[in-house]
Length: 271
Length: 289
Ligand SMILES: Nc1ncnc2c1ncn2[C@@H]1O[C@H](COP(=O)(O)OP(=O)(O)OP(=O)(O)O)[C@@H](O)[C@H]1O
Ligand SMILES: [Mg+2]
Image (spheres, rainbow over the protein chains, first blue to last red):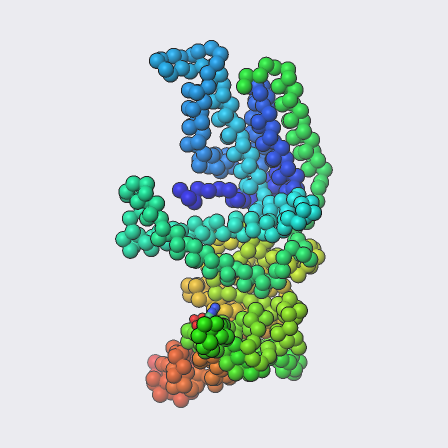
């Protein structure tokens, strides 16, 4: 279940999205996520869905993988949808039984929220599927570099992110190993109430902390040996250059936002 | 002749080096036992040196003294004429001496193989085009080029360790120190790494210092150094060192199996590997098939 985490999992390919400048991709992903929340009626939401589907197709990432990225949020999705159906009231009533009431507005809100969450997850996973974590953190570092004025250590933050992403799989493996080791010693991780279960996690957590510190120490050693002295004087193998296609992509997203706003004005808002 | 000349140049020199981890206990004032004591050793350019010794004999400490991670408590370590004591030499020395550790998981920094190999040269501030060239070259010379876009956590142990070696190669250091690079690997992974290291030493002339617990690896080296309780107790070619079986065993080490076999058969000859063993036995039994 833990290994289902797909954030930071790169899918190697050579699609238009893969070749796009990482900085532009990051900014445009952010902009289109904002656009998701601008949608006020089904027409603008439809435009958003078309955009999301088109982006998925352009990325050449298999649909199976995109759907897989939705797996961890299914529970949240259903939960919010149900909550919205029952708690939002207004407009025509479709169904009424005792205190349960399903209304037009409730259904609309539920559909809206579901589509919004799905597009949000799909768009952000597309970003991580088509960009290597190194490029992503690199892009973030460059976008945030103006913050250096405020004495924020942008490079250090980006390096921390890189290392965190790098060590996620290693630590998951480690957790599994420790869990098995403790089970072999008779630890009971699966039964009991919530308190008992939480307590059972302590013998997992402490060895994990200790070994993480040791790893961190060794890693720092290895990084020093490889000449790492911080961000100063570092060069990059992969240069970032904005190309025509990046500006076209930018124009497309601008058109999307424009289109959404126009549709919002032209048609009646439902939410 | 030329190689002979190069061999004579000292790349790393230990002059009476002593090192201790916690020099003095603040409360009790007890001075701890040194991890390495009174070491005088010169490593020649182009040499392949294996370091042997039982656990805690100070091998890793010796390795870390080579590239200015640790500063000697007494004595000096000189790398290509630079003293590791001087703060400003640290970075320069690490451009000359690269290091590969035992656990490949804890030395890989990036999430893509080629990005990781690029990490070292990027730190050195090398031009992007040149980095690209070095990364490709390094990955090719450890036979990992076709895996360059994969994620390190999906690789096997031997492959990960070869990526780590490529990371050092791309820095184009003159010397590589490997601290038990094969300890976590299976026989196949071990053979891969050893072959790679040998080739780098022979073809690119990179000086190699390799700490190991495997005698079969040590016999592949030009020179074997045995450590015990922080001191260098034996130093010579594999033939010289392993000829004194009693002494080697007294330091808690084993001799290669072929050597042990021939010794058990009272064969006076110096045998280091299976092939030599077969040859000798063949000759003695001469024609008896
Ligand atoms: N970080 C440390 N802090 C304190 N003492 C240490 C530290 N690392 C090693 N030592 C001590 O220094 C001595 C030499 O250790 P070193 O790691 O160099 O041995 P080694 O020959 O590499 O052993 P191994 O074969 O187990 O790797 C040992 O007695 C050890 O206990
Ligand atoms: Mg050691």
